[in-house]
Length: 203
Image (cartoon, rainbow, N blue to C red; front, side, top):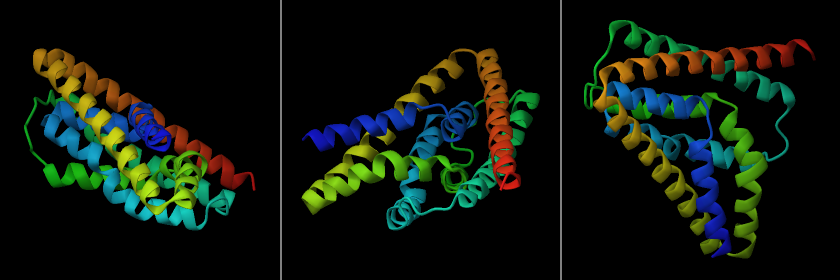
């Protein structure tokens, strides 16, 4: 039970940590409603199906330049998302429920795949805990994954509902939050691009 509790706590923490995916979740919720925000919260279920096995296979063996390349890709992805949110802010976009359901899910998965965060997270935190559970019992490892994604998606759903209600209560607040999301995404993008370029050029 201790392993399951750790997994749930880790999932909630990962969902609430400020980052590109969380900012995109909030922006999609404000633009298209809480259901699209929930789809973004579920998007790691797609991307992690590739990320987790890859990280576990090469845990601790990924070269530094590989992380720098991921940072550049993640920065480009965040820059593209920032542009879309900024355009919505300029147009004074109102909530359009379920305007782009599949796009929200796929873009969320793409954000995860192209950013270094999930790889580092699974390599340094979740991966070792999962392997420890796996060594004890296969069922326990399955419980770890179930607990982690229950916590992650659950916390993401709460975020989506909260920001949907806040946006519905005030269109001006929605526009202000969209502007904030665009700014945060731009900062994340520039930070990732700088780290990636600095890392590659410094080698």
